[in-house]
Each structure stands twice: as structure tokens, then as C-alpha cells.
Length: 67
Image (cartoon, rainbow, N blue to C red; front, top):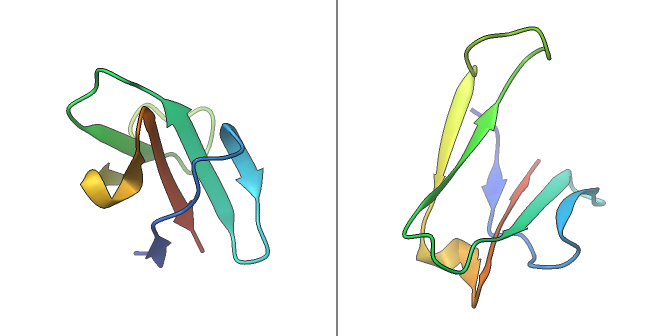
């Protein structure tokens, strides 16, 4: 398992940071969000699933940073 940080709501999408990669998406009506990590684009199943909680939410935006 990798180190997980709260991340930032901006910029949207994925962005390389000094510490890893930040992921952010707009989902104003979502009750929960999961980030699925795949080892390869050919894989059918993720190698890891990370559930975001309310600390990863800023208004309509869900975000997380992986180191």
C-alpha cells in the first residue's frame, strides 16, 4: 500500500506533484468515491482500490494524493 494524503481540489484530473500524483474530480451528488489503481492499461481488475471519505471532499470536488 502506498502513502495516501488528502490532496487538493485543484487542478481537476490527475497532476504530478512534488510528492506524487494528485487526483481530483467534480462529483457534486456523489455520496462516496473510489480510486481504482491498475498496474497496466490491459488489466481487467485493479491492483488497489482506495475509498475516499469526507476529508477528501471540498464542496463538489473529491481529491486525493498518492505518494
